[in-house]
Length: 220
Image (tube, rainbow, N blue to C red; front, top):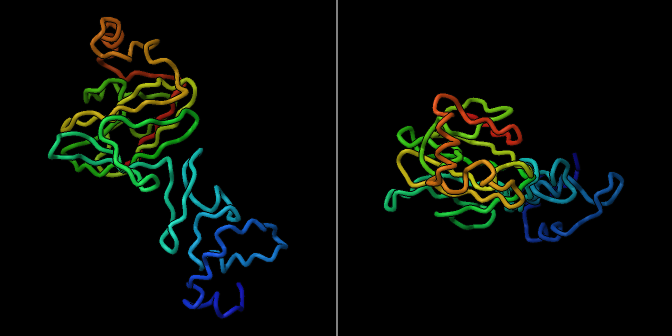
């Protein structure tokens, strides 16, 4: 650790720390003091290891919140707007709330942190109705139950259906549009009222739908 007194005390937390924001001399033998960087309130910085120092999930980018932490562009907080009876997603990174549709990008792992309460569990489904037997399971889902307090991780790729839904029994669904995903109509998923969709799901009423290309991991 540095023996610089400004690093070892709160005195280092001053306006001068802002000068560290654009430092790119990240070499181990460079002049940048990494202790000063951290104590200057940088938890997301190009010179920090592992995804710029953050713990954003794969494919995510972070933004520093000085002396408080960081935000990730692939993390959303899920709750219910009881006045409207809908699921809503909020992003600290974008400082925005989404109440009808959330656009995602294939190739990124998304974290949905749910806090809807036990009466309103949430799961990601192929249909806008809350139907646990029609959830998108796949190579790994641990466990397959819905989540009412905790994260759901959704790993997307080019084979992920480009239309999915966050659903809950106590609220209208939130549509997830995955740009770069597979055409959902190929699965009979685009329009839940079509005969092809009804036919597709009629054979899955006793077991989860398995889409081998999509990995959805749910943690309580």
